[in-house]
Length: 266
Image (cartoon, rainbow, N blue to C red; front, side, top):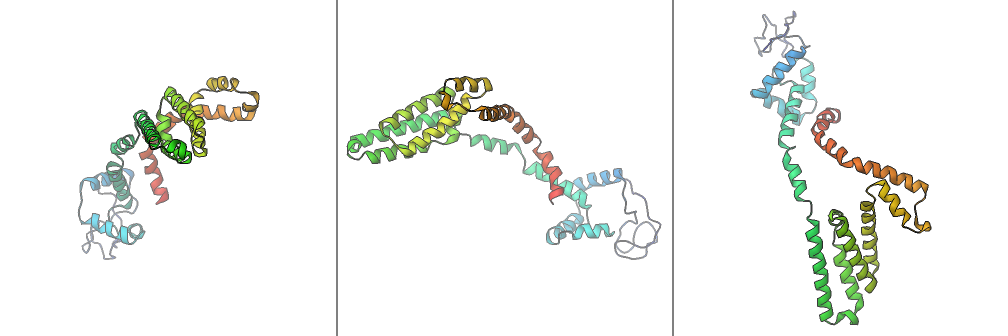
């Protein structure tokens, strides 16, 4: 490893003692120039990654207890006791990315994705079972309000993400079933659920601008979107088609984003 360029002055920048040769006899700091070459910096940084001595802990303690003190001392020339702050930052960043940012995050996210087709069928079966029990108890005709409220509450438990993950055909069947229940037992809360799911279903149907225009033609003129709404929808569909690519690119480059933003936000 290169020793760097030695200073012509004979005062130690770390402790102020007189320096006879290349090293201070009091503290041991080399009498080097403050400006370090690029390759010298790289070689020192690599050496720090594979070699730890008391400098690491002498740097870590004031770094946590006295923010900014290490940098001020290092710029003033008091370097014998510290690791290069920039090298320390790079090392900590690498350790962070190796430990914190791992494929486990992606696996965890995937584990939280619901198996919505099975869940939807199970919830529908639960809904039918509850209605059957209420009917057997004689509450269907006696207290219709309880039946409506119970049905709507169970239906609302179907999460938006569950419904989104259903196939287009499954969404259509689910909506038809909900509309039948709502027609038989009118409920404001169930109506809101149907409106919410219908909006999701329409967005799924409008996966392309051509499909959106085709659906618009099936509507009554008063229910069709105006030219501005169509323009906004066209733009939204265009962005939506590229959303997966954009999300994948951002996810792939997330470590680079952190690495570049950390020194700016530190």
